[in-house]
Structures are given as C-alpha cells and as structure tokens.
Image (cartoon, rainbow, N blue to C red):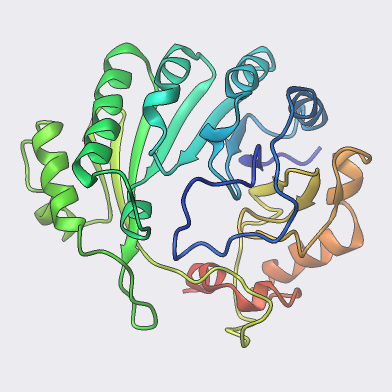
Length: 291
C-alpha cells in the first residue's frame, strides 16, 4: 500500500477573504458534511497519519469543524490546519480542547493582501493571544507564515512585515532579533512549539498562462495528494480547479485512483524532473522545487 506524508482535505472552498495572491475557484461553492468527511477518513485509512484541512477556502468557516476533529481523533489521524487567522477567536476553544490537532499554520501575509475591515493590530493581537493560550494549554504546534517576500519576477504585499515582526517580538517576549535571525535562515523557532517562517511569493499553476517550464519537480503523488470538496482527487494542494482529476474518492477506492495511468505518468514524469501535465508546466512552486 502506498503511504503519503500528508493528504489534503478541502472541507470548504469558501473563504471570508479575497487575497490577491490566491487564484480563487470557479467550482461550485459549499461545505463538506460530517458524513462526507467520515467517508473520506474511512477511504484513506492506512494511507497516511496526517491530514491537512486546506486546499481552497477557510477551514474555520465550516461549522462541522469540531465533528471533523472528533472523527479524526477516533481514526488516530493527526490534523494540521492552515488558516488566515481572522476567525481564530470563534474557534479557539474547539481547537485548544481537541486532542486531534498537531499543527496550526496561520498565513499572516493574507492580511495585507486584502481590503480589511478589521484593524491590523486587533487581528495580530487575536492571533498571538491564541498562540500564547494554545501553547500554555495544549501541545499544538503553531507556525506563523509570511510567504510574501519579493522575487525577481513577483512583487508581493509586504509593507507591514516590519510591524508584524516587531509585534511578534513584543507580544511573545522574544529575546532575540528576528530580523537578524532571518539573515541566517527562513524558518525560526520562536519558542517551544512556536515557529515563524518566511518564504518568497510564488505563482499558482494556471492553465491560461504561458508555459513556465517543463523542467520541474513536485511532491504530488509522492508525499501528498489532495481531495477536493466534491471528492475529486488531485495530485497536490495547488490544483485549485481540479484540472488534474485522478478520480473521485466517493465512488472509487483510493488504491484504484493512485494506480491509474494518469497518476502513474505524473509520478514517473516527476521522477525524471519533467512535468507531463500542462498545468504543472505552469506552476511557479514546482519550478521553485526544481532549483
């Protein structure tokens, strides 16, 4: 049986923000039910120990979150969640009291990439207060993300980074300079189970843009797969439209899906550092992995 390091599950493709770096989706919008989530967990039994509630959408919008965490705990599955953090106060107790959650990633760069009604410092205070409380009351790993560094090709929204970093230092009582630390590496351990990661902005795969390169590498179908809201299985978490459909988890076994000719061709292509799918040839993240 194939084993994956992680399987992404899209519990909703609806988001409360509209980040300028996000490709959005034209798929039918909705929320995954408890019954559908349980079926997905049953179908992936034995294939991974880690799920990520993330593809498109904001996972904290789904009112079934607490049920999802209970189902995952019963299945001995570790849950990792990626969120923009704006709804953290509404789900704080559910998250801290869950024994299923391994890690929560909060994309701080999403704030600046939007026209927000919420005050910047109120947003940041809410996130950092949650992290402090989660650190005291649980074993949850919290990772803050600033994935908005400029590249030669892409200019990101990052004017607030210095204020964000200074606020983190103050609120979390960091006793060293984060700016100095980032000169040495992009990922920094702030405290036990608290991390801050910086990374360059990248272009999401888009079938409508010019070819970037067919010399790419991706961990799709090697370390990960994704399951969209309607059950469509895709090779990785960046296929926002389900363009590379390998099958559907609700009417097929996962073993059949990942052993299909299309899936095997993708896997073998990346083993040769070549993209066989047109979408993968237009993925800035896969190109970055090739470097």
